[in-house]
Figure (cartoon, rainbow, N blue to C red):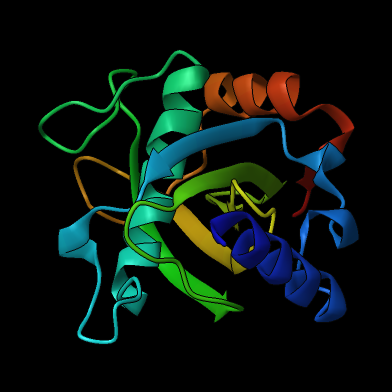
Length: 171
């Protein structure tokens, strides 16, 4: 019965066009998996909408860690860069439930002077159903003035080296 239920979920995802097959993942070079915990669901038995932003934050931190940069307890990265979220945009396609294994795909799609954009896709690992698309604009802030300042060249280089032609450089 459980196998039939999974097949039905997969078929629904295909019909609704919300699955891995309809998304170009070649631009996403970072993937992180996590499992939905019981305290992350609401009274409807589905992951609370705010938790998906937390999942995206986990994806961002793991992406940056993968680049060799670590977040210190102060909230500043170990290379001295201070990044803050300026804007979040999220679209909910389908719900996740307790114990679902999720795949969080993360990329940086563009770099501007003092900001850049993370993009995330979250899928159910079992069915490859797309659950969430998310974009987050991040801004580099001066540690002294807390005002936007140019993204350091060393960070630009690390991102460009990792993302290759998939990252756009904007003015």
